[in-house]
Image (cartoon, rainbow, N blue to C red; front, side, top):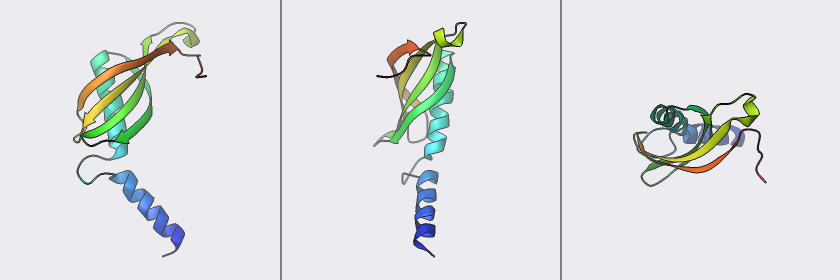
Amino acid sequence: MTTTDHKANNKESQQRKPRDNGISLSTAMRAAARQLGELLQCQTVQVSAVKATEAGWSANVEVVEVERIPETTSVMASYRVALDSDGELISYERTRRYARGQLDR
C-alpha cells in the first residue's frame, strides 16, 4: 500500500465514522438540516459548518426565514444546532439574520 492509498483510507474512515460511538459526519449534517427545517417550518439551504463535540455534534444551518421576490431580498438566518450522539436535535439558536444577497465582510 502506498502512502497516498494509506492517507485516502484514513480519510475515508474518518468521514464514515469520525467518533467512536455515534453517527457519521454526513449523517449528522443531513439530520441537522432536516430536523431544524421541520421544527421551524422553513426551507434549509445549506449546512455551513459541522463538528464533533463531547455530547454529539454541533452544526450551523442556513435557512430561508422570509421568502421574497426577487430571491436576493429573501431574509435568511443562520442557526447553531446541537445534536446528541444519535443525531437527535437537542438545542438550537439563531445567530444571525441577513438578506440572501449579503456577503460577509
